[in-house]
Length: 120
Image (tube, rainbow, N blue to C red; front, side):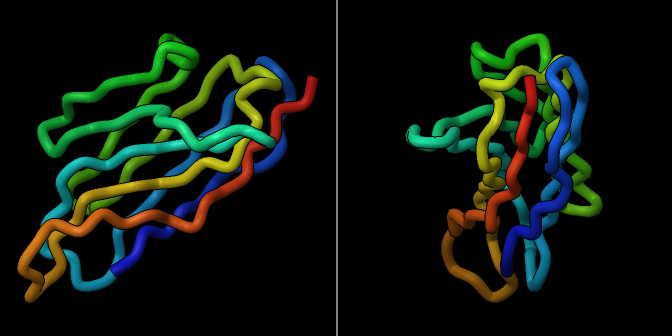
């Protein structure tokens, strides 16, 4: 069981970009799916999170610009980023609580991270 992230890249300030993440492998259930980011020289912090029922929460620095959504049938989560600013430059990490087939507990799993660079 792993989280595979895709998307990211280089974009100019004011532009838009998507990052997506898929839970793959022997996944029986997916609970919360979230995106975190680690800007250069800073600690990793929560960007957005979404529950299985679709209820979501967005961090204040990106509220109104970023949207999180998920596809429960495909076990994927997408972060749509609009009006990007240079300070949004970071490595973005997917995180989820998963129940693997044959498992006995919810597991917290991290994706490998994808770099988003916003040029001024």
